[in-house]
Image 1: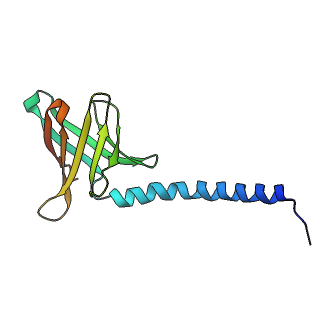
Image 2 (image 1 turned 45 degrees about the horizontal axis):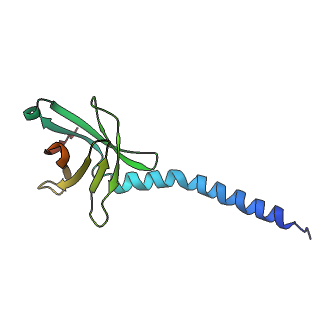
Image 3 (image 1 turned 45 degrees about the vertical axis):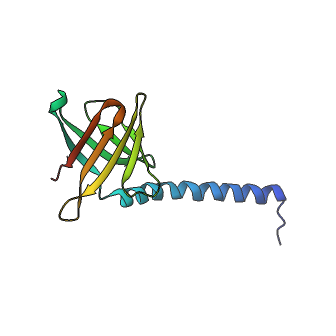
Amino acid sequence: MIKLSKNVVVSVFVGMSFLLTLMALPAVAQDLEKKYAPILGDYEFDMTESGQGVMTVQFYVENDALWAWPQDAGDPGEMIPKEGEEFVFTIEDEMSVWVLTFSKDENGKYTKCHAVNEAQGIDITGEKIIE
């Protein structure tokens, strides 16, 4: 019978734990993509009244987080789920806080995103671009 020192046993245990953690990371991203699949995609927000035209915002999962990227208008913002509310998120930027609420259409599919930024006086609803 082979006797292993306590240090060898601990090292093997730590190494295996690390490998298992690395193997689980892609599963976390897959779980998020599956969880948020109904709301992922591009949405158009008509902001012509404020002189900004139509803005496309892409909602996607990357690096184990949900992101909103206002294309041609800035950097992506990490969406933080509001506890106890399905598909309601906040995004904090340097100026204010956005609240995003996704809702279903008459067919039961998530196709609307209501975005509110009280500090900037923005209250607008975007429509999902269905291809």
